[in-house]
Amino acid sequence: MKLMTGPAGSSISRRSNEIGPVLSETRTMFKNRLASLFIAALLPVSVHAADCPSADTAAKGFVLENTGARSEFHKAEGQIVKTVNHFGGSQQQTVFSFAGLFDLARFSKNEQYAIHPLSDLSRIVPLKKGARTNVAFLALGPDERADTRWSLELTVAGQESFSLGECKYKVFRIKQVTKRGDEQVDILSVLYSPDLQATLAKVYDEGTADEYTVRYDRIQSLTH
Image (cartoon, one colour):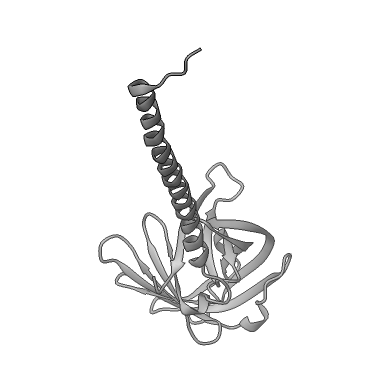
């Protein structure tokens, strides 16, 4: 059998010589593309992981958000936490709370609220599962009777995990019952993060057909 030579053979040879570098370049481009995709896939994880405030960084301030509100948390003196809530439009509310667990004072255009604790608040924290505490206080306001004693009963029902986007936190589920004298005026459960010193969700009408939850969905450092 005679081997193909001449122009036809030269054409095949040329095509082989031309195709070889193209395939080599294609393989190189494909590898570079895969490397880029791999790096791109890793970057969001790194960014999210770096922007999950923790017990070590929460004192620098952080922001919690949902579709209707943005709350800026600032650690103040001792166990006092200052929160500035921004609602739709220009509505704003400033709250001072004990360790982010319950409000001591709230100020806004439409509300001026404050309480004076009669109990020793230092025994409340650190929280432990099963712990029960009764906080006696006076409500301060022009329409409040000076001799009316209020109380806030706190019962730590359990501990669970709570997600804010890519960030996960251990929270205590705490039942809060507010009474004016012997009259119960409010009851709810809160999901509270001791690391952040913040209430991340409130559960109303718990255990009933009308149960609903108001919660935050996102978190980030205040410096961002």
